[in-house]
Image (tube, rainbow, N blue to C red; front, side, top):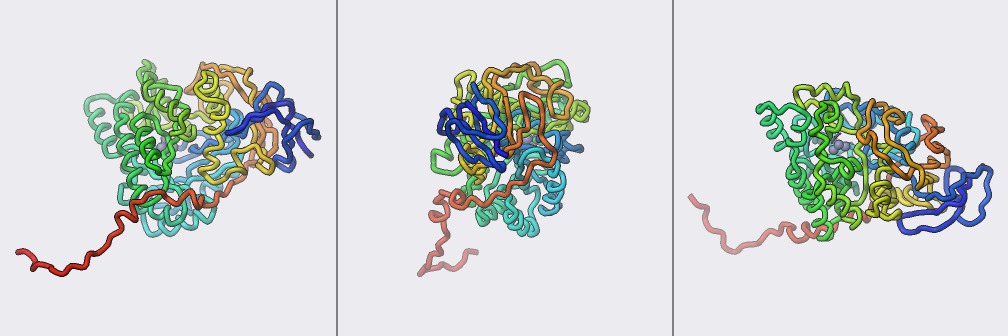
Length: 483
Ligand code: DUC
Ligand code: ZN
Ligand code: ZN
Ligand code: ZN
């Protein structure tokens, strides 16, 4: 059985050309003219692109006293509906829990996935057990380790733990990720705001100004440098953090930055909304910023100083958000976005001329496939690649509404926004999973994608080790010690 995607324009991160694509056994078998197949998908007027890869989701994650509301069923359905064909979720051990134990939990939940997936492993505490288990985790194809520099008293790790874990990543050829916010300062500012009676959702943003992100990003970059390891900074939301990443890259360091579609398209005025629910639904960390920060993020995507657009999809229902009535620090942090990432980025990026279609493919799929060392199996339209494909019709449009979304929550932070540029077809390893908004995906179809360590990519460029390698000086005169 073969499928041919016919009459479209193939768009990859570096090329754009007219061709048919033939698929067999879940992979791309042939790219060329006048191809024939048992099943034909009409792609005329459409772009045929690598399916999106969302490198940052939290599905069914225990967090802030509850569980994020989308699981691997609704979450990966949402992904596919919007043209995303792979997600990378975070296996999150609670402090004290072993990494392999947490991995087992994520293995169990992910059997419901409709599209392919992988995991990052979070390091939320440090011990000999964690040190040892990191090797086993890498052997199982999970070669990225996430560190929270915020959430003091819960998930946060301190600098000594960060340095130890980064050095272990270097030994294993793995890449550390950071949630870069200064958790000590956030805790102080939160306490002050609450003491002054500022307990509404708007105070969440005041408790996490751009400086807490800029400081932590700079610190993480320097600690990575001393460990001789590359660094991936998740949810870069502001110029302060982007500037640190730009500077590191200019100095020849392998440091990557990931903005979220939410920070690119929604701003801090959302927190000033008179309706408590409206504001609380948009509470996430880092918070939305002003337009100047948004411009910085868009510029970074165009210039290449920022590498991939993600969602940090961590959806909570309105009822869950209301845990924080009277105390903003108890509002579960997180927003959805899995279904809307590609259409929003196409509309506000390509549709406005800020990004070319090729750049769109690079930042939604190809760049992260390369960083995660799964290219060209993923992130490519090439013979032999997995047939994870989105056929995007630039003329199809809709108004985003919670009423028609796949996500299990009762609202959408992009509610009412018009998107133009929607999938006509979405294929997951050759399986047609979406046709003009109608779902035909299958629970359990998704497979775990093991990722080998990136090897050369992980040989840090830092010269710090050679420059500062301790050399003991042999002395001829040593004075008697002082009194
Ligand atoms: N930020 C969120 O908003 N939610 C989940 C975790 C995080 O860092
Ligand atoms: Zn985070
Ligand atoms: Zn987050
Ligand atoms: Zn996250």
